[in-house]
Amino acid sequence: MDSQKTRPLTAYLLIFVRIVLVLSILGCILLSLYLAVRYALPFLIACALSFFLNPIVSFLEKKTGLPRGLSSFIVLFSLFSLVIGILLFTAMALIKGLSSLTRTVPGQLGMLIKDLQSLFFSKLIPSWEHALHIFSGLPQGQQKAIQLNIESMAGSAADLINNLAGNLISSLTQFVSSLPNTLVSALFIFLAAFFLSKDSERIKKRLSFFQTPPAVSVPLRKVWKDLKKTCIGFVQAQFILVTLTMILVYLGLKALKTEQPFTIALISGFVDLIPYLGIGVIFIPWILYQLFMHHYFFTIGLTSLYTALVIQRQLMEPKILSTHIGLDPLATLVALYFGFRWLGFSGLVIGPLSLVIVKALYQAGTLRTVRLFILGKKVE
Image (cartoon, rainbow, N blue to C red; front, side, top):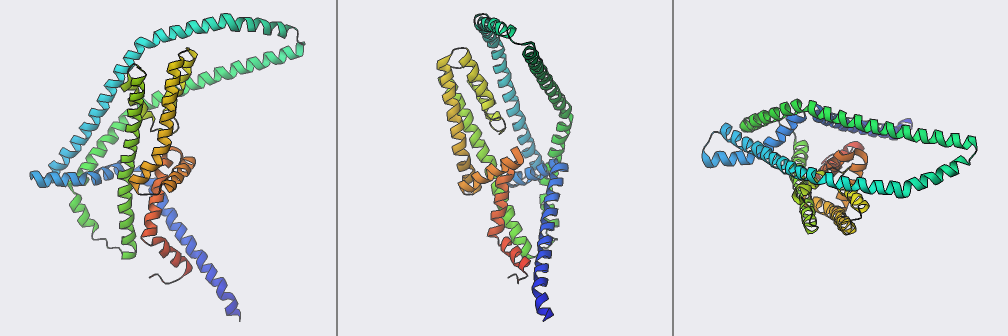
């Protein structure tokens, strides 16, 4: 009788132990990934780079008969040269555009200062005199309270300006100080990717000695295949979205007869990759400035262009991501939303990536296997 009463309790206790075991394994995996990303990110980038370039290296080796080491060097050197060339071209376009802006901005600022002076003398001074007249009629206690509030607001404004200036100087200092580390990391990525690509066949043979049971190897292969497809698809999707943004900005500014539309389109494309900022950081101040300068037609044009860009981004991003990474648009949208809400910018990558992993594990039967293990049933 006692054994019958304790049997369900023992079963529940075993289920609890198995749940703790599964969660512990999952926690160890997540911790390992976190430590790998934090302390070995250049090596991970080199591994990914080598993996994606291996087919090109093998093709070049087969078609030309060159040694694999030389083929790997040619492919990697070509890739790095292409990236540096694009960066230099972009930098020259930006310098050209900014030099043009430096010729036009002083005149625009002069007009803005004149408008501010006109506003100050025609509106603010009479209002200030009227306010002083009202202020002088108030009791001493209220006058003192108003003075204290004004001093507090002025102090807060000064602190805000000091903080902004300090943050800007700190950011520039960090950027300059990080350049040597960035160059060293780039060199390490190049060398690591070269050796990984050069010795890829030997590495595969060594890894083949580590035999894993089918219950582990089958879902791992499935997850790896889906992750590879997702990474390639994600890069393609972001490239399409940024290209669409740059094309729309260029055509819109060209129609509005704006100076340096290509430079502004390039800047907008890069800024569009940053969710916290987005193209609004360019267009919203620009629209407000044009409105203040009484350029109403141009203001309407910029507002229409900005609205079209925002709508295009919101409508196309889930669709393009779902098409290229093989997920349902609604599920992709939910993953993007919660990923961004919880993790910020990195969540836009981690959210869909987590969804792909869960989908791959489900299709490989891993989730069902874990469920049967927790319940203590036989795994088929």
